[in-house]
Length: 156
Image 1 (cartoon, rainbow, N blue to C red):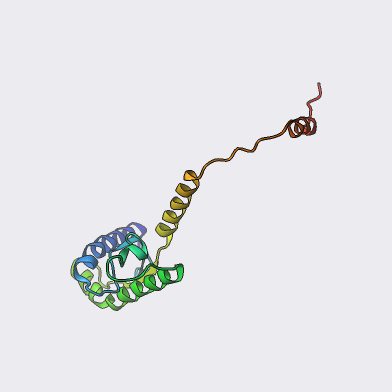
Image 2: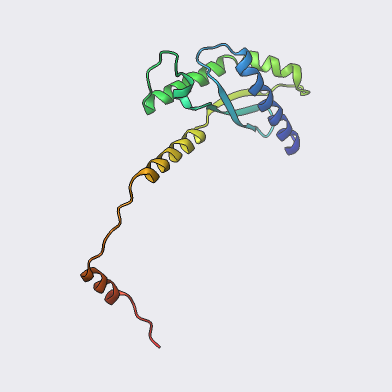
């Protein structure tokens, strides 16, 4: 399959599933998700969709009586989401068959994309560090003189 054709097919699959999943998949395991990328196999028989839970795994279940998550709990919820999407694969492929102009609709494989979660975690850590007070390291006179003596001198 040509690269441009695969790229167009991947873009259409990503766009269509981004619209249909929130509207028509009523599985409670599938919260608001984002398909961050679609990778097509060389022969076009499989499409691997990278899935991120919008707002993270905790935010997706907030207000539904679900307790806050540990890191392991977030991974389990992401796996539940992947399982829910996998169980809806037949329905999603039938929907794509009505839209796509290909002879065979690719098999859909869903994988967790943790890039967005990692980015948000790093952002939060950087904000936390920025909000901490800065402690300057005061050097005593002895430290200053020893620091200047130890520094290499340039010879002329």
